[in-house]
Image (cartoon, rainbow, N blue to C red; front, top):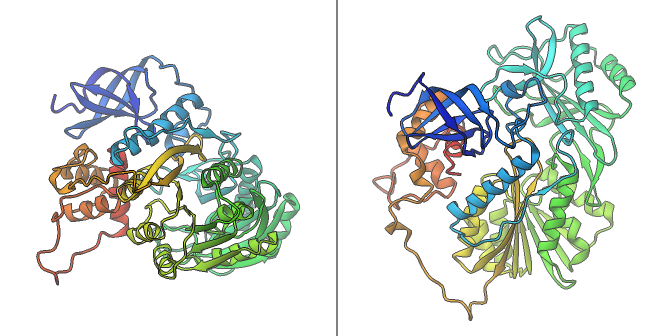
Length: 545
């Protein structure tokens, strides 16, 4: 049914995509419809026909599916952050379990791997301990905080985000009122002029302490003393106020320099009994109660013995490893960010932990070096970024041959890819535990237990992937469809080479010689970060990662 644009059709929503859109089918073609739920019977207007798939909007809702509810946020649609707010939580949880199971089945090839029911935290709203509000002007010219609409930098004012504690929303509103009253300028992305870019807030979940940070295009704040006095009088839970200097033309929120205006420049809290100091640049899980459940699962999966050595790669501030330190003989943590390593060492000292050491290094390089030195950890914990582990890290893990590997991942697709790599080399995934650290959003954490096979009792079977024309992930969308999606949603033009580079990064296997340079000395251009991000979004949309 070509040329469907602007046509009306009756449609039943059958499933959900990972971005929260409902998916139905017309003449075999997938149609993605925002703000719909499985079981919805709708009349859809096709607004974009991409060939093998289409986008639509609801023209009329005839019957709601069992999980469809009325969203309770007035800016739910334009903001886009809570992509599941039109669903009841039971439906959302079921969908997230499915996303994780599908990734391990489709991308990892694990047909019979047990995926446990989604583990949830105690809260589905008001759970975030960190807030980053861009600031701008509302239609009346008043200073306001909010969020950028999806795939844009158009500010959507939001006075009360339901994911943030009410006190943090109130502080942001008070900051905006002060900026308005004093005539302090706001940053303009187009001209690269103006001062205040973002309001950044952190709250210690257990301590109640609040850090207030203003990200600014400069190094000082007009009326800074008056600002500190007024805001701390209104909100005595604010224990420190910091300026973060970001003078770059960039989408990255924070810069590298922090200047305390009030207090020590950090707040204190605990996570799984580990004391932590949090500044604006500290990595910290945003949902403390759910993170404590996540770490408890990792500890259970590790099943450490008193004589064991635990290697914690991508350890951050050391919270996962330190939460298990009493279970083992020795803990070695590795992290590339110097500030995080110093925090980990300080946390260990504050706990009185004497069996831990922390190294500042790239995970792959450190793991390779430790393996060469003969370190033989019985358990290795991996907590990589969204892009997953690199080959050097995984190869070093294999060399050290622990009896167990515990992988904590914020991206089920790359976790499935990395588990496939380890499984093909002697480690059997035993079970997967999805954990919902980010209710009402598309994100879900995953904990995987892998166990070393007894090579005397198993036969290794090799599969030549070059003999397979395409993986099931690759067959999801053609290069032309990916290019069209990126152009439509971002205005960027991307090449087949760039798409291939991003696919390879996420473990979507290409034929061995695809897009390789014609000679050994030939140099290939690398995909720019903004195009990589756009291609990654397209791969997510098509369910390829």
